[in-house]
Length: 211
Image (cartoon, rainbow, N blue to C red; front, top):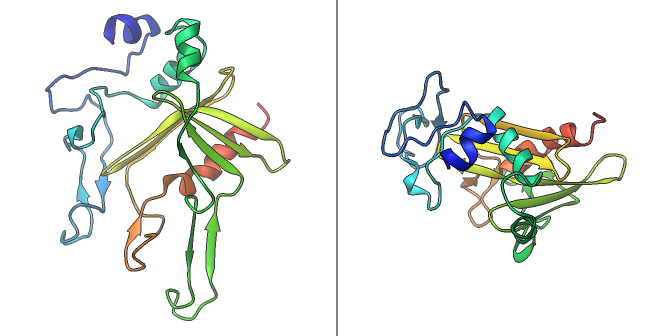
């Protein structure tokens, strides 16, 4: 990783720490509202959490700026030969978001008699290649936009990093909390995060606005 990617791309904010549990300075603080429901404040400091709880999380610590450099290089063919890049971007039917996946609503019973509230992300799809996702959504003017990248979520942190296929537009950002965004699909008394609902407007503002 260091020899083939980090050094050639000049990723000065990216490290492979191995078994070092510390974070490079300076770093943000991350707070979670999950896994410890009995916490007195309802949230807890998840900054130094061990990410090995999530299979395939890897070993890298990076910055938003480096993520953009990496994705532009990856999609631009600087890291993989053409045949492998084509294979990586070949979409597979193992996962595709639907309107139901990207919406939440509160019934009058849940809102205490208030009218039903619904918020949804319509006209967007998500599909998987090999270790990368393609999201296609519709801009306010009706034109479609396709971006490649990946999102990431772990207690205390939500991250998004996406770039257009030609690399001309890119967006990477992180939120230092994992607050829920919708009522849980199967339990009206519980919640589950849906980061795309929270971040869709951010992505649309970046990728639908003229450069």
